[in-house]
Length: 452
Image (cartoon, rainbow, N blue to C red; front, side, top):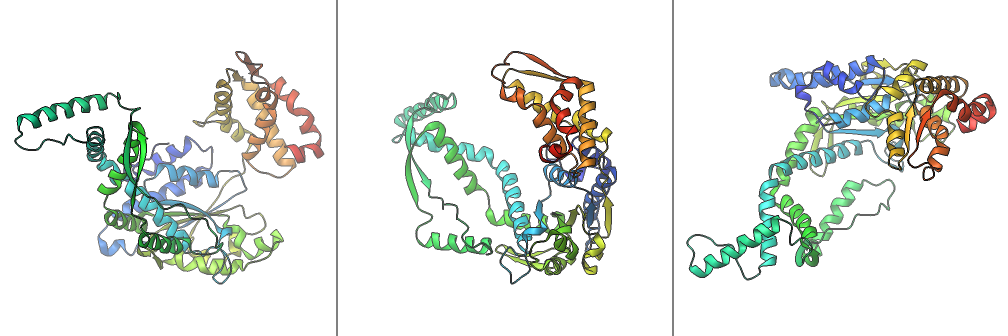
């Protein structure tokens, strides 16, 4: 999915984009599309009125495997706004070992900065390539400098040599030649040794210590021209991008257009925790900690304060053992929009296997094509697979569309295993083949509980 500018997309266009990948759940897609579009509308309002309009946060309810997480995953790919998906269960109340809820804002800002830097890097791409080329020529011709201004005859000759080498460099004739290049020493990625610590603060401190002990020094490396080009290009891009400007743009974008998707919100309700049978690390305390962030608070990051008042929050949960009213009342009030996603029907399974751009059937056909095996899913086979998925979901745990992954793996197990022997063959997948591979497991209720 290509990243698109939300400013140019109407709610209908957003829904159409989601329809390409997600079957059904029209109400959920429509609600999300309206919420995203309202953020664009808000930007066009006068400053005084703009500050008064708060985002309408959403709770999505529905069994597992019906598209809640998939909607968030596709949104993150299609929208140009900073977006992060987090699990409510990985946070703990302040005072317990674990991540504090404010870290989701710091993570969102990090994503925003990365996005902005990527955009700014595109602006300086051409200048960085020019500088890279000059550095490579300097390495190839250490005694021949780039001519400047009026030049003497000897310098003209050197200039001709340099231009000749430039043409050869662009043609790739020097790609395998080794040269010595000075590259900046980059700090090694840190190993997380403190399970509940604020890693952003620790990382910042470690970077400061690194700079004191010569973290900015350069070292010589012997690389081919092809390798050196990519290394030097990245360094030149970093030099040309203004980090302070990137941070300021990212902070503004996070505050005004940021989106946080909180999954498994039902697991931090009192009833959800009790039903799970595990230790209750103050689930209600996590809700109380999330509340001020959703209401609008200033969160301290190493790049300054971030105001969360206009960040859009989308929460999702299965709510098998609990319901939204089990959340603390204050948090319920901060999620005024609620939508229930429908359980998938037999027809939905059929559409999932045939309609999306990257449908499961197409994925398996392409995978086997890499081995020289041509699979063809017949209409009756897809109908039978949909029936089996519906039957098994109704009889055992309903895991929605994820059931199709299990069924497809079992169906094509032998074909996948014997792919080398089947090379060059065309294999039609029919209803009879589906029954041959799956009917025994489907009929044996005890066996299907463990295999399907």
